[in-house]
Image 1 (cartoon, rainbow, N blue to C red):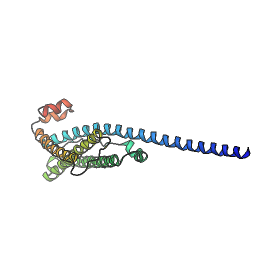
Image 2 (cartoon, one colour):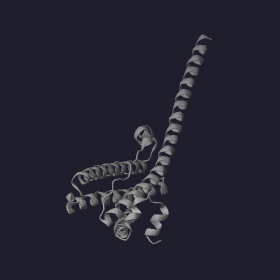
Image 3 (cartoon, rainbow, N blue to C red):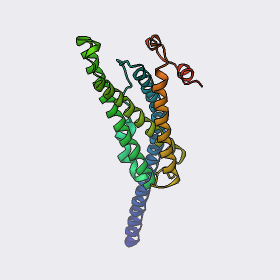
Image 4 (cartoon, rainbow, N blue to C red):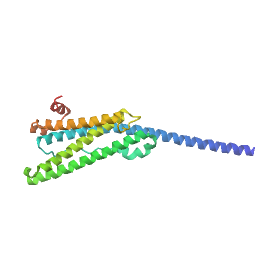
Length: 226
């Protein structure tokens, strides 16, 4: 009887341990599943944020096309969930998902660096103009400022495609070199460059008084002739 009691006690303890382990595993699984969902929701928000940044850069392209210099620009974009919780979610992601998330958020960091570089140069130019006048701005400096706008616009154009591709291919979002998806990406980059130069040319036709008011989406569509 005593032996049986010991066996029952040990068996009960083992069953309790197994149940505890199963419960912990189930909690981890559900936690990672929820984090994956939150990461995807954040991508959807980032997609909208990047499109807003593209609109902001478009305004700067118009001003650059006019031969003017702006005193404003886009704001940096945050990714709180990825920065704080990706490490907890990573074990629940596929290899394809991990590669895509890493590429997207590395590109986002580059976009924010481009924004910072643009804003710093804009502040420097505005300070110089306020002290030394318009004549102090050389063509080289002006074109360098314009180059920062172009770099930022291209970076956002590239990133918005990567995010869209991930959201449209949640199970396998990785872009493999020389694949159909890679070909579509390269075509998109060509389109981004085409649109960028179109916006610069469109800016040359805008009355400078127009830049004194805030843009709306309808303004963009009208200027583009759509």
